[in-house]
Length: 329
Ligand code: NAI
Image (cartoon, rainbow, N blue to C red; front, side):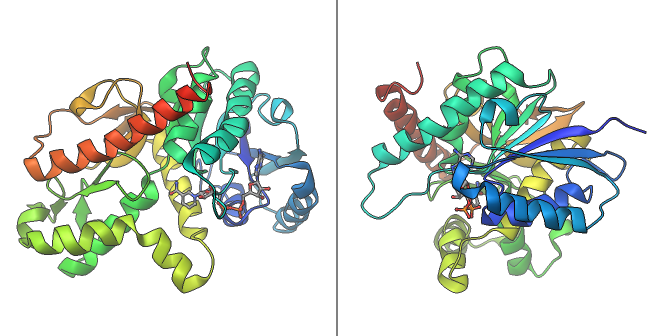
């Protein structure tokens, strides 16, 4: 039997945590032949709630769940970690400026990056879900100089899946008929869901849609503002779909993306597509042998260029702001 994989989940007592932990423990994160040890990190006030979730996890009697430990100290929680899911973050509250938000999150993701640097296993993979996800990932990565930068990723898979679902509905096809969707840029309202390289049953998706107005005025804003629409409808933010996307992201990272398709991942730029090196921005990517590779050589039309640049500009502003706050060099 395989050795258990250590999976650390921060914000374990939160909404996403509750939707995520059971799926990890059931084998959906890594595969049905891989036992997992869960390491839950919470703030001290939420440790009791995390213990309650751990009781329920016990009560599922998951055959693959090899243990659960709960911590309020990042150094302990990330000791030996193979897969780190950084979900807990400081949400924006009323009247909070962007600078305050970035600073509060710097106080979380800086120390977590240091703890990962100090104690993680050699093969550690990090997925940041907590918002602002790209910049939180950048902060954590900057505090982990001994770990290859490309092990730090942020989640745009939910945006990717939303785009698949919207396009499938428009074309009256199944989501699995669509390949090569791309989310570019920041996981924020400036993100750019790109269908110009997507294929629908082998046919170019933009040609199949053949409706630039729909693309510009319906598809892009619907995908980008879907989170707000869910809050409006549900009275709470998207948690199960976010947890599902985190599962998809890590599963593909570890097991590889299917032949003939790609997915969307925010990872440190290597300078591809004019995105400044080091910025954690979303790209089309495939996973091969356990590593992400940015899909190269796509032709970017003017419509796309404008939108990619705008989202990348926002990421640069966030990076400059956290640099000014002394959260990164
Ligand atoms: P939540 O508020 O229900 O849970 C957050 C949990 O994090 C709380 O239990 C809190 O105690 C914990 N936490 C706070 N600081 C912590 C720290 N320093 N260490 C460990 N735990 C800490 O929030 P929810 O709904 O679970 O969302 C979590 C994050 O995910 C939010 O930042 C949200 O904006 C983000 N999100 C990201 C998405 C994406 O696509 N990238 C999609 C949906 C949500």
